[in-house]
Structure formats: C-alpha cells, structure tokens
Image (cartoon, rainbow, N blue to C red; front, top):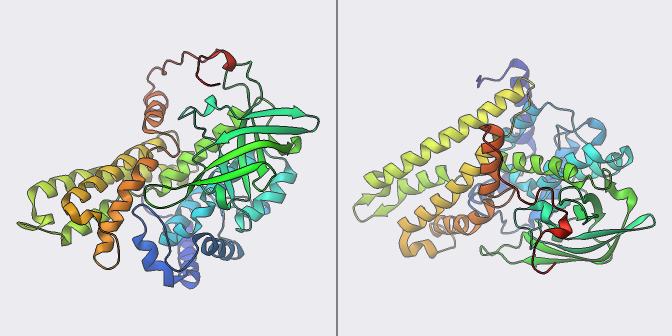
Length: 414
C-alpha cells in the first residue's frame, strides 16, 4: 500500500480543499461535528432544505456526484478522486445525507440499466439536488431475504399495476422518485420472477407512513401501494431480470454505507479523558484503558483495510467484496462502544440536553441507532456469508428453496 498522493492526486486535493474552505457553511460546522453519534439533526435548520442548498452549490461548482459522467451531472472524476473529495468535504458531507441513497445506489442503477433518455432526464436533477430518490426493497415478511418479496406487479397493456407494501424505506417521506423491485412471476424460483421499476413517489395509490424510531427520529417509513400505475417505459432491465438489477443497487449500497460509517472510537477516547470516576479519570483506570486499547486496534484495522481499497482505486483496480468487512466490524463496534459508554455514565447516561449533558445524550443516541446500522445494507449474518463465500472461498450456504417456484415455498399468510 502507498498512502501518499500522486502529484496529480495532491493537486486535486488542494483544489478540493480550497473550494470547501471558500464555500462550506461554516456556521454549521460545530453542530455537524457533534451529530456523528447516532442522528443528524440541526437545531435551527431543516436538514432536507440545507442539504438541497449544499448539493446545489456543489453541483454549480462541479463537485456533486463527481465520479459520474459529465453529461449526467458529474465531473468524470476517477474513483480515487471521489475518495479524496469525501475526505476533504469532511463533516459537511453529512449535509448530503438526503442524497446518499440517490447518489450512491439509485443513480448508479439507473446509469447501468436505464435508457439514455432516462439518464439525461433524471440523473442531472439528482446530482443538482433538485430531486431526491429512495430505495423500495425491504418488506415486512422478507427480513434479510430481498428475493422473498411479495409486492406484485401485473401487466395491463403498456402499464403495470402495483399492489403491496415496503418497509424501512429511508427518506421516502421527502423523496420524489424511488427504485421499486416487484414480483411479476410467482411461478418460477424467487430470484427469477422479479422485475425492477422506478416511479414517482407522488403517484396515485402511494401512501407513505413515517416510522417513529427509538431515538426520536423519523427517517424510516412504511410505503403502501394500492393499484399504482407505472408505465412499462419505467422498467429497468428485462421482465424477470429484477434480481440482476437489484445486485447493482445492493453492491453500491454496501460500499456507500461502509465508506461513511462511524465507530465512535475518537468520541469515546475524548469522553474517557474527561470523565471522573470514583478513583479519578476514566482514562487512568486499567480496565478502561484495556477496553480502549482493544477498540483502538480494531479501529486501526478498519483504517488500513480501507486504505487497501483506496490504494486499489488509485491503481485503477476495482475493490472486491472485502468491503463488507468494514461495515460488519464498525456496526458491532458502534453498538458495543455505546453500551460501554452508557455503563460508565451510570444514571447520567439517560441525560440529553445542552453543554456537558450533550455528550451523554450523544452516546444515548448512538445506542438507540446502532441496531439499525447493523441491519441497513445487509445484516451481520448476510455480510458474514459474503465474506465467507466470496473472500475466504468457503462452501456456499445451504439454500433449500433455491430452485423451488416461489408460490410453492411453504409460508404463512401468503
């Protein structure tokens, strides 16, 4: 691995850094820095509106979706230049949270499977922040089995009629469009009877119900479809090819989530350096130091595993499924660190508020948000299967329903 920028990369980094310094909303820097432990909330601003303004400014400066082709609203930058940009954008990257699904997952899927007309119509507006996209995959009865979905799409002339339900859809309540995977043929094995569409989230028959989370946020939603009409022109890929199309989305999702997921290690070090226990500072307690050392080693491992992927990008190579390691390890660390911090605080861990209480409240938010982090983009079990099969080369997991027609798989309530 080579951690140094090439001369070209160094020049790009300097240009990016100067632009961020000159254009970033510095009045939000402190608040954004404190919002890394579980939820991103601005006291006096609407996150979506602020995000749109920052995305538009980046687009005007040619810094939005910069790895996309120029004709679709990007910069035509290399993958390593995208990584450099994310490093220089820093905490301000949190402002583009409403666009992360569109930029990281939906956009690449439309780019890979959509018509040229689709790409030129939808991608530039996504890149500029004019339109927001969501991803309609998970269902109540499916769990981690995306291919076990029940939402139906039935062909009627040049249209499709959609009925069903999705759940845990991030940002559906403020999205303009969404990627929707449906079942079009229940008489074949579950992975073969799927078809992908995109739709206007304001279409008649679409109902979005926000889900109140344990941390007080409402980022996720249930989405119901009742006789929703989608033109066949909004189909991505061939009929029955939905699983292949969805893999494009899922692979980009895991890379996108893994690239920005926090672990809480720096915050815990700072907290322990100032927390007074009965016998003195927490950082001086041997048991605390042992815990911190263990997490520091894991954090270092994540850092250098990430550098391996960055080095591969710098050489023009494509990182492989080992990226799943980052999300798996960091997701578990996030929950463990939050639990430990709450234990150290005792009753004070229940406090939220201003000044010194904010730290306790942040770890509380981390703890309440961490289970969701371990589910989004693939559960721990799914990621372990990917690592075992595709990184370590172990035998594949036994899938007893692999070749069974979907409508013949035993289940309740179908």
